Image 1: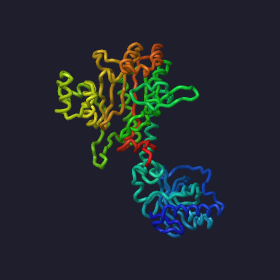
Image 2: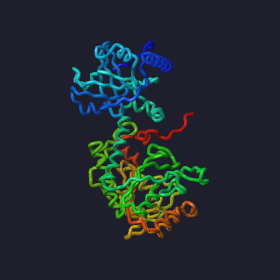
Image 3: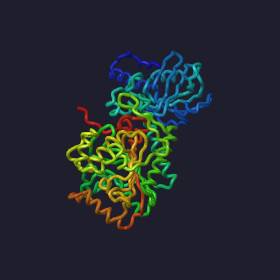
Image 4: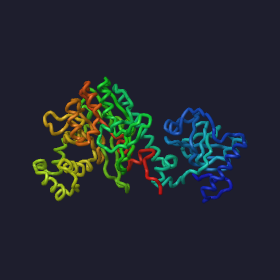
Length: 495
């Protein structure tokens, strides 16, 4: 369809000229006794629903934005859309009054309208709505992005998300799917007896993970505070208080780097279940993600692409998912004798035989972790539960009773990245304090002693998980960057 050009403008007019003409039209609409910014408009359906459940001869009432328009004189074909989808409409001169027709001729792409009419199928087989009446809900002053090329500038798409959503159906669908994913997560958990809670965003001590927090100051209480890096310690307090099944789906904040997989403000789901352990949480995670995939997308297979558009691999979520020990996975890529080598030999093999870059600052545990990340994690397409990592890496999990050098945890890896850790949660207050002290070293001010004191009141044995919702959405929608799945990502100021 071709855009109906504004009166007194020609193709190629500047944006300023187009805005000026639209402002004039707003005045003309007012002169006709019509409010160009509408009012209440009750609807019975939406464009996507009409098309998905199309039934000829049905009365419908809906609203949306005009995103395409073909002027055929006494017949007007146009498309009305929102983020969920669109439907073609047909308005004829004889169907409305002279005043309504004059009003219609003042509308164009970008304007919001309410439509009432009857569904029919055109001679070309297109499901459509024959318009009987319409209402102006908003006269847009700025023109929409070019309908053929959309919004090609990626930086502008992130900064002006509203333009991206109205001009790029793939982007709009991705964010609709994100909402449905979150909806299904909540449904899955609440149907199984979990209670959703909210815990503080502003905290005295940023605990529950190892990360650099955003720092602020609370004037009324005269004390420094941080934005939380994780809700874990507060959710465990609720276990102590008697919540046996609890979850929080909310934001975390980390004052660290930004790349295609990291945004300083991100969404995380944390779930805790009294009586569970890392294995029961792995089973729940496997079931939850496959349930979401089937309900929202109708498939368990998801294609993933490189930035240049070439297929990287297809992630297959078909159950059961593999579970393997961290050490066994490292030995598969680094040699069966890896853990029998001296630290110097491990570093030498990593750099010279495995060609993994090892920073001088890394200790021996860090060397093994780097080998794991580069040769196991980043090359893993299908779901893999990596179990029993080094004790020093996870101070909030229980040590394995058979090998106290590792902890009873899993890291769910797929699509070349960690998606979700799960723990058998540490509930021994004495051991927990020792582990936190070991992690903090000389920076004992980072230890949440109040949390340790809470554990002394008795926390039941429990399993817990924390899953990055943005990364899950990236996987399921095929988004190449976390910015493509966060509506308003953090960006540098324009110079």
